[in-house]
Amino acid sequence: MKQKEINDQIKEILKLLQKNNEFEAQILFDVLASSLSKEKQYEAIIKTFNHLSKNISDKTLLFNFELAFAYVEMKNENSAESIYEFLLTKEPDNPSILNNLSNIKSKKRKFKEAFELISRAFQIDAVDEIIKNNYDSLNLLLSEQREKELKFKHSTTLLERENDFVITKLKLFIQNSKKDENYSNGILPIPKWKFRIFIQTDDQKAEFLREQWLDKNYILNTGQRGVYNEVVYEINPFLEKTLMNIKRNEINQNWINALELINMKTLDEVNYFRNLKKIEKLNKEFKKIIKRD
Image (cartoon, rainbow, N blue to C red):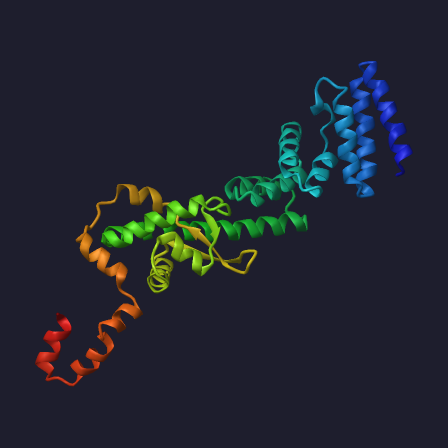
């Protein structure tokens, strides 16, 4: 549809609005939006709506499926979500509205809401292939989410056994992660060098703690990659609250300071590795005592 045709239609709708004939104006806009949608002129639909909405007391009168769909295509999912939610109050059993609104909720990681919507759509139209696929995908995703949640909850029971050094590093990690500009709902891409910065230690201990925290489900490797191919992590959502209430197994601060100083370089400086080889040559009884001390 050419711009002149669109402008002519807009003029007709405006005339109807001036005569307070909002019902006919609504029908004419629905027809125009449908025609433009078939031609994938999504930007034109939104521009027309924005122009017309300035001349109507209640812009929801112009809300329709094609307008919501156009907003999705133009990457404005917040506006699309609002329109779909309004349309659902008028047509609660429309499977297409339910499906599309479910997709938006899912992209926003509101999986429970998304599944409720797609379940309703599936009950109404179980034959539709798109609805069935979306239902199956979300059902599987929620099962995985429930399993992950159980693992996350169980992992917090391990915190009681952690010493003050580890607890301190976990708190630092959460605190600094939340300050990062890329942090969003507990998910964050972290290159290895930044992990060390977050917990304020050297590379060796940072890597040791990272591996331990992954094993204990304090953090999760999402399998995704960031812009610079760095690993994207999800922080256990129950971790921060548990850390606030935990009874700390305190260890001497001097020990913590000493631990912070231990690395390959410092061990080499005190001839640790050379002495270890000498100890191996000692009598078994003396060897056990020396290794212990």
